[in-house]
Length: 267
Image (cartoon, rainbow, N blue to C red):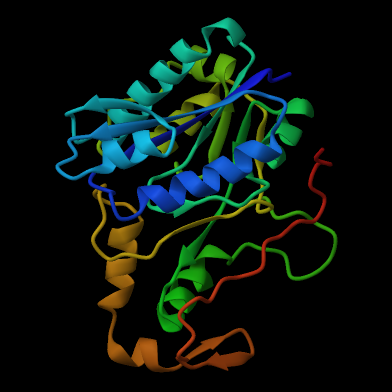
């Protein structure tokens, strides 16, 4: 059973977004009371005021110069476990990204899974402030395996460092994050799967992440969105989805409703 929570946020030149991220984390942490929650921002090769903004927002800040999201997550997690050494191994680690905002139930939902015996919780994302046509292109593929109606919970196939929870015991025994420039989340989850860890895949607490076309990690979400953005114009103008045809609209905040069916009870 978790006795403390550590939130780890890697960041590279995110001065414009880190404040909103940490405000959302603070709200989620308040819902997790009375468990202690520490937030660590791993400021990696930042040339802006990311570290200063994070510190003023109450986060612990560790600096490094690796330009590697895997290294940043690993260093931030090691520092968080140091801060919570009195609670190890009963620490729950929650990962997100500096360009993302988490829902208020982000931590309580993960903790509910942990109390039900799960070692890892893989959450989903929604695009924040994306043009409706771009969000539609992304969502067509993203939600492809989602059940249409019925009580079945969506066992989604996605892995996001922006929405990942893991027990400290499972994390340490797996060897932690590898110092990769991209794909560190998938690589860790592959090792955890090979070790037979109990992994929950939940759409009940989606994280909103920036729909930018130039990102920080090569091969990440921004590269995917950039490819969709550069698709032929006729793919953007009018596309059939199932039995309906979707056309672009001025709505710039389109998101799909989260799947909350059959989730563990939170408290």
